[in-house]
Amino acid sequence: MAESPRSVNSIVFPSQLRQSCAMKWLSLGLFALLGACAPLSIYYKPGVEITRLETDTTQCQVQAVQEVPPNNQIRQSPPVFVPGRRYCNSGGCFYGDPFWAEGQVYTVDTNAPLRGKVTDQCMAAKGYAPVRVPLCPLGAVPPPGQTTRLPQLGPNSCAIRYSGGGFQIVEVQ
Image 1 (tube, rainbow, N blue to C red):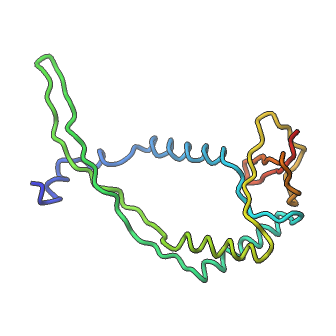
Image 2 (image 1 turned 90 degrees about the vertical axis):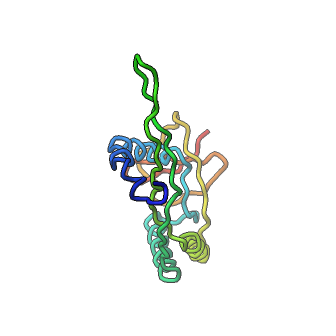
């Protein structure tokens, strides 16, 4: 029975191998929540307008894709052994049949790290440096509006993220 993948998988219903829709949404929400807590990572050059930063970033990303095209490879994680489930009733306990669940199939772009380096080099040639600005504490009150021009960063600089993707860099006391 173990020699044939068809016979092993025939005892497992497809619904047992997939996440429920609720679990997928819960995990997506968790990743979004964690991303909202992370520092603001941007390319930085004091005095540059945000629109110019976005244009330069896009140009460098396009150049990087042209120089280092994606190299997507399909991979599969190892299979997982699922022990038999324990069932108990008034007559005693017994175990259901164990099974092997297939590993998940996923895609990896093996050129992504090199493409990131090419983007970093292009942005450095334009005078930008990658920075991570910590998020402001919850009590920080920002002035109205969003950052339109990158300010000078100081030791008390922090960032406030907005839902539309915008941000504001402020100095807190």
